[in-house]
Amino acid sequence: MRSVTYSMSVSLDGYIVGPDGGFDWTPPDEEIFRFATDEIRQVGVHLLGRRLYEAMLYWETADRSPSLDGLAAVGRHSVLEFAALWKALPKVVFSTTLSAVQGHARLASGSLAEEIERLRAGPGKGDIAIGGATLAAEAAASDLIDEYRVRVHPVLVGGGIPFFPRHERRVDLELVETRTFRSRVVYLRYRVAR
Image (tube, rainbow, N blue to C red; front, side):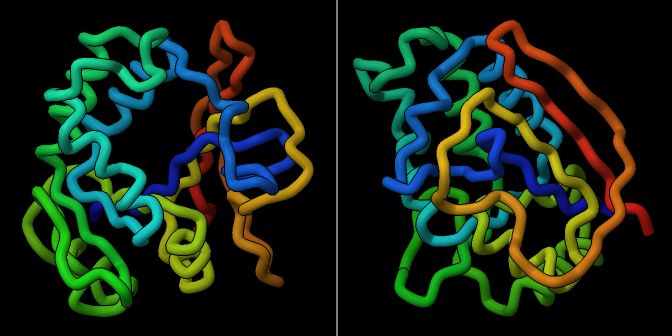
């Protein structure tokens, strides 16, 4: 069965963005970017909320952009490689306000649980990745996440949008993998103990 994964960068105090909505504390880094690119190679379909979908629209045209828009530290080849993978990746967008989406994306036709059930039952390879804290919180509340993949940045931002959903339920996890990058970012991969 295909695994449902939730993977994002997070501050040490558990936020994906700070109180001001910014994430300038996750500066572009070639090593981490290549790691994230390798992670995307394992994804068969990406489920996104509206806000993340709109933020990721950059990657639909990054290959035509003469500038790297703040990604110079990553390198043009790496940016183009990620852009090609992202563009080709099937995406399902959960939104009540969008009437259309672009590229290989489609609007969700059912609930998150129904979409995941349909994707798990149907043909396809690779993980079912969830992007965005709000969508991930809904998936976690329904016990749909199989793995949490966290890139912990050495910073305390003091508030914002939390990576982990705030619900009153215990979830036991098994550590699967760790890695420390040169930038002092620590990757933690946990599987939900069932």
